[in-house]
Length: 345
Image 1 (cartoon, rainbow, N blue to C red):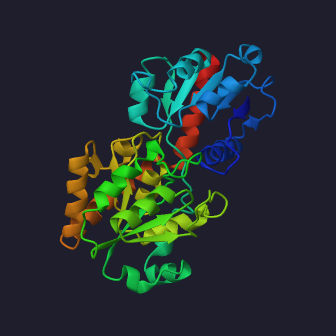
Image 2 (cartoon, rainbow, N blue to C red):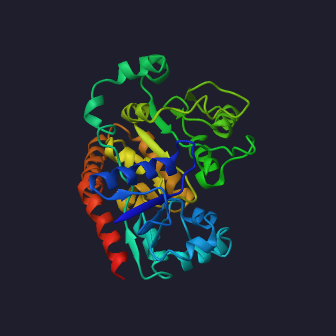
């Protein structure tokens, strides 16, 4: 069996990480990875709509094409912008790999070969036990003055929120407007917002506008800061470890991986009802409207101490679900099963 992996963004972002994960899985499974898609038995396309960038005449020669849904696909939605691309790709695809049950339920209406395969997670890196009782050390490493966080709840966000093409505008998929609305009316003396990664221009500007206390792990710039403020993945786990509450406010997500990372790090996380949320979080931490989300965050802030025991129990439940679901050996077996299936049908 020979597999050709197609799709990359070249920026070391989620697509490239996924490509690396699949390539590593092939090595563990002792499956040959080829650089020539014409000689491959299977084309595994990581970035689903990028399969259309291969020469169409050549694509039609290949019957065993697998496409992975990375961003959330919903052709049932009237204003879904990639509807045309979806139906073109679906005609080429012998099978789909999807990361969430939410996505599975949609795609299986259009293709008979749809398989659930969550993202891989590096547990050597996202190992909560490495960071126990190291909060002061971590704060010092990132030059965060202790008095800025002393006695405050640390709320975190490590996702890009600003359009690269226009640094004055929010990236709509990430819903940064919701994050600001959730925080702007909270008592300013009770929390601080911890930000990391590049393209945080919109959030930082709005924090200043609404006097939301924040700490940015990076250098604030007016220009695009990709390559300047990109935080190495190796540093992300320690930031989760000092976080009391991580907020996902996205409008549309294939993931986000923050849900996997936070639950692996035993960090409390709340999320809009997107992507992987329903597969990894308890229902009371998922919100499908603004008012309920706002109430949930306010309750967490106002009753932080009294909710600690309940929160710890929920975090442990989600952690166990995480390590059972994302077990590397289990995911490898699922991937091999998909490959064998499409070679038969």
